[in-house]
Image (cartoon, rainbow, N blue to C red; front, top):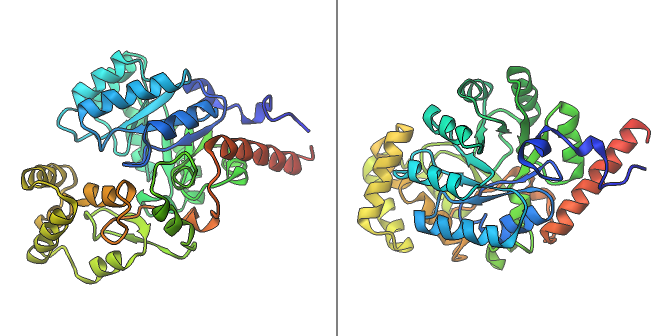
Length: 356
């Protein structure tokens, strides 16, 4: 049997592009992917991505410094393309010599050009073939193609259909996402022709994740059928755990402005968000996503509702983004153990399929 460390079948274009040992990416989950998780992933041989979309500029700078102090391995930073200070953030990534810039939405052409000019690898997440084609024209270096099984904002195309479509459409490293939790998934993605896998929920449910224990327990108790895709949070489809709060939002038809505004104000009091911050966030999201005023009123609170869960442990008021693979997870390994297990299982699976 081929030794895990030297197995050439697990060395892909992604490994060469970003300088990692294994083609495994930990996604930049807001309020979850902090320095500790990114450091653990980088040191385990994967690509750890720091979530900066929910951080102020100064907090982002401090977080990057913390990751840099904790690992010599390459890592990435996830940013919002609609942030008021996105250009300033881009320049800091360049100055700090961050290896990868990650985006949940397509970055503008000027942003892509500036990052590439400075040698930063640009990897946006896409959910449809046409989106992959568009960002490829703009010059991105790779894409994370997330199928509908993925958590948080997600598309409607299943992973098993999306990955081949994207591979046929673009000549770039494609990282498969949506429903991956183990080494068999990595082997399957490589068989499709992908260059690696990206996982969020699987890394959230590790001992290196800073998510409160009571929240992790709720995730571990969620079956495969316990998630739902909803547009009631901010107008865009999101896969989340089907909690009582989500069911109430779905039933309330919150796109009607008076009802949505009342709920937004109630959530504002629960999360402690200032009215000024609420309005600023809402207007920015309305411009970026073409939301109705009702959707805007609730969407502005969405980041703080997620924070209420992922940081404060308040599951009764929070949002719990999750991939459908949550139902296949029943324990909390360290990131090092998780990555080693995925690599070993992928190798064993490929050996079995290839008669090794």
